[in-house]
Amino acid sequence: MKNITRSVWVLSIVSLFTDMASEMLYPVLPIYLQTIGFSILLIGILEGIAEATSGLSKGYFGQLSDSKAKRSPFVQIGYAFSAISKPMMAFFVYPLWILFARTLDRFGKGIRTGARDALLSDEATPATKGEVFGFHRSMDTLGAVLGPLFALIYLFYYPEEYINLFYIAFIPGALAVISTFFLKDKKRLAAPKKKKIGFFSFIDYWKKSPSEYKITARGLLFFALFNSSDVFLLLKAKEAGFDDTMVIGMYIFYNLVYAAFAFPLGRLADKLGLKRMFLFGLILFSLVYFGMAAFTSTYAFIVLFFGYGLYAAATEGITKAWLSNLVSKENTATAIGTFSAFQSICAMIASTLAGLLWYQFGADTSFLLTAIATVFVILYFTIKKPDLNKGFK
Image 1 (cartoon, rainbow, N blue to C red):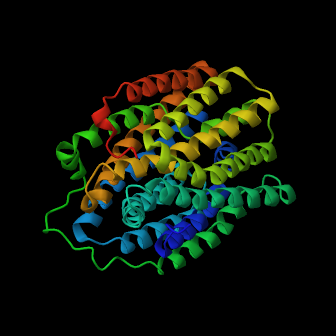
Image 2: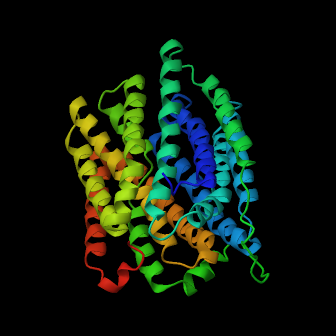
């Protein structure tokens, strides 16, 4: 734990509170949306638009953070937007209002992500990136355990009364915002020469970014093009006959596995190589999606959600640690923000495609297509030349 600095602790606690708020609602959200008239296809479109907004703003604000040599203000504002969006979803049930509230939440994520990950990167060396990002993901995901657990207890006593959860979620969100004021930018961070930053200026960075970064990002983005929202996993469990309590319980189980393994797998990745750990995660992901199409029993879903938790632990933090090792320190927020921007466009397509395939051909077709596409991503990274392993360790 000697590599876990004060700033890493603060950012991890902030993420814990925020995920507690967000994930308190996440497993309930698709069920709630269906009760107010949203179809599977409309849910897919909603999630896709929200994620695309998040991603495009990550590209802009990541570059703006590097340009101004500031991190903490972006972190503070971003978490504040996400906090106030929670109770907004309970005010009205009109689709446009729900879209606005959900998009505001993701916009807040877009503002903070590049700056936050740059802060984490600054607190680590190339040899400890997996450990630092893994620890942050573990704490972040611990919030994703506590939030749904609270929702589960609440719904046990107040079945199908979802509205109050959106108000309650504001409390941990506000605690997260308060915690951000314990962050301070490093004094050594010097602003580069001033230049005009446009909303799509991150595209220029992609053109001039290191070749290792672009080649790696291309493979990651192809995977994102088929990696739809986790909402569809929960809806699959619901379709298989799980009641609301079981669906939320399964989601808690997945996050518990994720939280338990993200830190140790991050440390292991620093020793074995970030690429190897990421490929291990992709193999698990493919097996889980094949399994989702093939099985419907309770025991099978327990195994599949366990595997999905391991996949997340082996890839989420690793991806950012990997990319941050391929670029210069002064461009870290820009690089991560640029990738996140393109990733979220892919996520919009992925969620919309998954919703459409599910609507037209059923859930199994949607899951099978994703599993097969993931196999091609595994092959892509497996055949890369040795000189592309820069930053993998």
